[in-house]
Length: 136
Length: 90
Image (cartoon, rainbow over all chains, first blue to last red; front, top):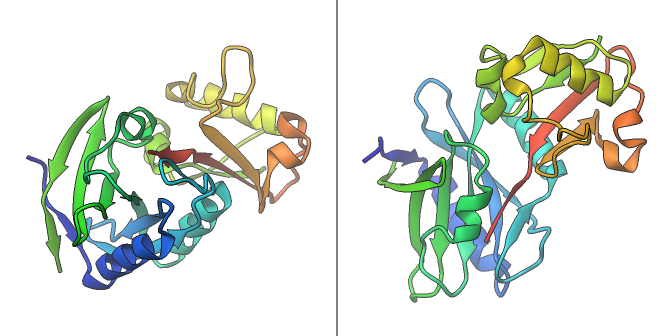
């Protein structure tokens, strides 16, 4: 199992809240980490350009702005989150096929089981590996 | 010369740099310059036909070059070109 994802509590709360705010559509956003520790300390909620309950697209402009903002704070973009409105918090074939970065964390918020289920994955060359999430 | 901002996924092909000073007067020339300077980027930015990959977005300063002149967009001195992966899924 890979190293756990350390997720700062406010970023965690923000990504869960944004996932609920997006209903009935999928919600998405970006995550930024401290380069030295890998700790995810910032969440950038974005629009879902696909405006769909089944797929998501982070607007490229939002990615650009988040990248610049993160760099200005000494952070680096380190992952993306999105919600699954009715299915389990596991990467879909579309998620695996479209994952751009083997170093990124792919966080999925499952909203189909009552309480939100937040899980994180690495997706490397089409292979999915779950990583533990530690809040801190 | 334009500064080119690379996404994390491509930085390993460019010696780890987040921003590189590139040559070229159009977006197409900048992409060709990057491929020439960093052979690991060959096939990552453009299709064999020379068009930008559909999963790569290219910005000149704050504008998506698709809404400018595409790969023929002129790049001025001091401009920033950003290469962004398409981030999407299901």
